[in-house]
Length: 75
Picture 1 (tube, rainbow, N blue to C red):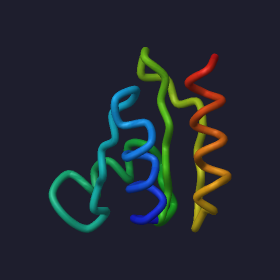
Picture 2: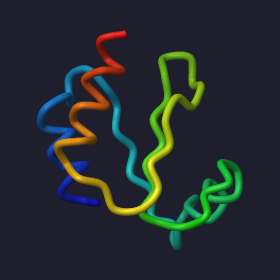
Picture 3: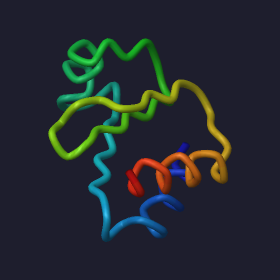
Picture 4: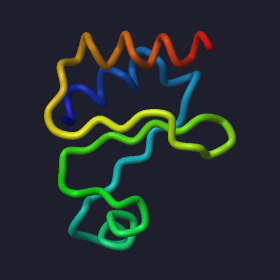
């Protein structure tokens, strides 16, 4: 999902924060357990208060993710 996330970062980078997690390194395993992430790729989207508002599991189409992010930012 790196190309999809790269595109989101380029398009919306000034409006949101993107944090990439490696599931096998550093805090990755703990984050996977904390958020009950079954595997990767998985994208979690949080609002300004830290509440999860969307979870995308598996490969995603860039255009669909861009529309979703734009809609969430418009709310």
